[in-house]
Length: 85
Image 1 (spheres, rainbow, N blue to C red):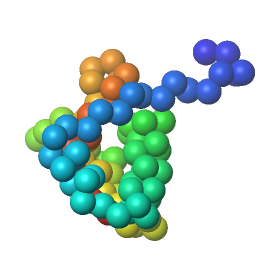
Image 2 (image 1 turned 90 degrees about the vertical axis):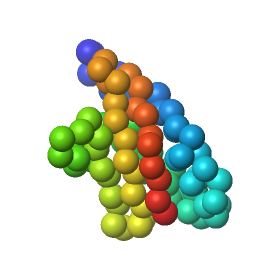
Image 3 (image 1 turned 180 degrees about the horizontal axis):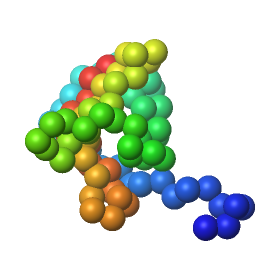
Image 4 (image 1 turned 120 degrees about the vertical axis):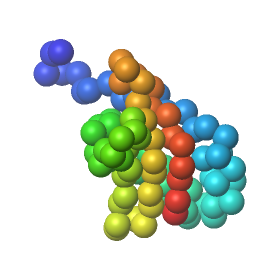
């Protein structure tokens, strides 16, 4: 990769339970959650591995959000299973 190009962000997909949770959030909570999801899409290693699963658990104590997700084998898609703000 040339130094002129930034790392490619993963595409983010929310599954039904996460979409249902998202629908219940306020605009401010959604904005805080968006920042966390962008951070994860840029660096999927941010979250801590959940033992004995493919899931990762990312918590941002400053913004008060939590995202549980996993990424595809090629790390091009991040699938969000749970959100909390």
